[in-house]
Length: 63
Length: 461
Image (tube, each protein chain N blue to C red):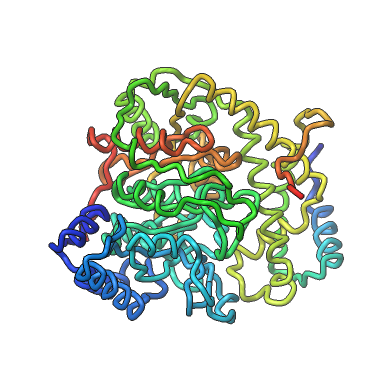
């Protein structure tokens, strides 16, 4: 997956913040954007790794 | 007793009547009062409680009752542990409004059942989302070896209090490295047990998938004493194992004969500074560990740990982000908000990868009993430092201090971080064992300690 550009990331952050009910201040945006860009880059390193459909996520719930 | 007495020396002296628990505790409280203005390790001292408990230990001895293996040993806990009568801060401003905890964390209860005496709560990075030991609300924990440098975090006070000689043992938490990083920067032995080994009940959480608790000390014997006293099932923590206690102390001095020890290469050497590589080489040589192995996909494991951390952290604090966003440390807030926005599909993938990675790494333990790796890429950075050099590139410090610890705690492997007393600052090496084999890591650490390769240096305070 290619990296998302800053403008698109800001749109995403504003939309997600509205959906989640998190108040945002303009001054916070550069740091949140930087953190989210790093997180998405790292998340996609994991997402790009081929795994079998059948593999269980690590947490296992015991009833 | 003197400032640098170990827990086992104190317990022996108290048991034999060469020292009273009250005198030991008063001396610790006096050191805290004198030195905390510099080290900023404690956020609360439990003076009356500690003195009452010390009198009870002394009375028990006078009455001829058996004393526990930690009789009269002062200890302190990261301020995310519930301490009866104190609000559990978890390094935050927001939690100051919480009601005081009604009862202690069970790990405190278990240590006190063994005769140890709680003397206070310790500074930490806000909500444990930290590798530096800095805290905007309480001020930074300061490294006793150079008070202009970081203790490491997030268990910063846990590192500073033990390295500074205020207490012989402390408890910390480790989600991505928060026991091992302060152990490395402060020159201490630190044990991050297997995920699920020690109950986490009545402690303020951070990342349920990755949170561990454990001790820091200046000797391996003290680590084993504290660890053994804290083991055992606890229905209050659904992650806590139902395995019976497996004491490590009886085999601590068994030596390293027969143990197969390898060195993690590749990812774990890339970016490591001169001191980290030197310490690793020294430890490997002392253990005759010549085999270099590659832990598969370690970089991806670190990335997955990062994602699980930021998303579970974001979810944990969602309500506080909605209502109290201004009361967070801005650096914590902005990462938690970002974490709350990561799509769930990416988090599930990270948890699936975790299963795969565990299977690959466990295969290595069919061939080796322990794996060595650096604990941190560098010695303690200066307070306030923002950037670091890694692999020839300048990168943000905060996010990268834990690059060698994260891929290990990601799958809950037990680790003892041993201090190599380089000059002028110490640095740690991780001894990583198979799940539930804390005893192996402690045996190796003890061998390194008895051969003087690993040692908790005394700072010039």
